[in-house]
Amino acid sequence: MVRIPDREWPATVVPGDAHERAQATGVLFRRLGWVTERLTRDERDDVERQLEFWYANGYCPDALLIAVSVLPGGERQRPRTAGERPGDFLRSRLNGWFDDGPAAAMNEVREPPRPGQTFEAWFAQRRKQALDEGGYRRPSRLTGAGERARAQAREIAAARRPDPVARVRESERRRAAALDSLPATPIVTPPPAAPATRATPRMVASFAGRQAVAAHSPAVRRIVARLREEKRGPTPAELAVLRNAVRDAHHHAGLGTLAAASAEVTDTTAELSPEAGRIHALLAHATDDRLPVDATVRLLLAGPGPEDLPVP
Image (cartoon, rainbow, N blue to C red; front, side):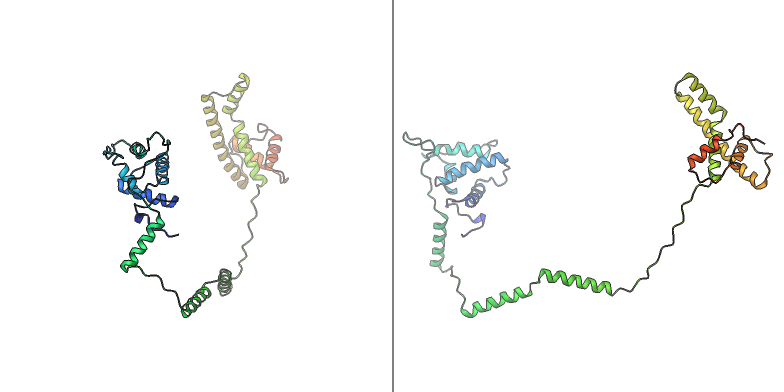
């Protein structure tokens, strides 16, 4: 079926199918100046339903343009107002073109003010007019040589068209050749990973000594005893004091650890502080029993109590 561009649709043709109705509606909108009109989906459906009814009754775009401008009696219709929507405008202006005779049906309309024609009739008329004016020339048929040349050209084009499977295989072949052309790279064996550092008994004893110093700090024991006696949790102020006491105890324990380590080297324990003496005694009790850290700490602290450990 012959199709023409939307802007070239003749206004005297009555559309027959959905595509032709869309083209005719576009011509009508351009003639009415509604090209920039923004319609909602419901408004567009309303306009299309109305125009489909009038197209089915033989009205072409030219006939509709006349019908919205004048009444069947020749009286001019009022122009469209500023707030009037396209669907309401068509409904009110085309209402006068319904047949109001006593024997007419409710959906019976008057004859179009301008008769239309089918697209086939219009196209045949245009072709005849072009033939009469010499502006139309029928396409000439190919001769036998022309048919053979066209078949040969199609064969050449099909032969040059790459096969998808062959193209993939060629790509894989080029990739494999590129990999084979690369120089061999020696395999470098990474050095063995260093064994995980295991906590030694002396490290565990030092840790246990710091914990013992913090746990037996006078300030810490005083606050804990008061909380146990009163059977309550610490207040914010007591919690702050407790934290500071634990922090100070850890600080003194760190200094004691250094002093205890120095005393082991110099073998002099006369000038050790009480914290250093406790840690030095725990270091002396450290044994390589291959126990986990928690078990070793409990074993060290379960032996002679920190209060009973010798203090120089």
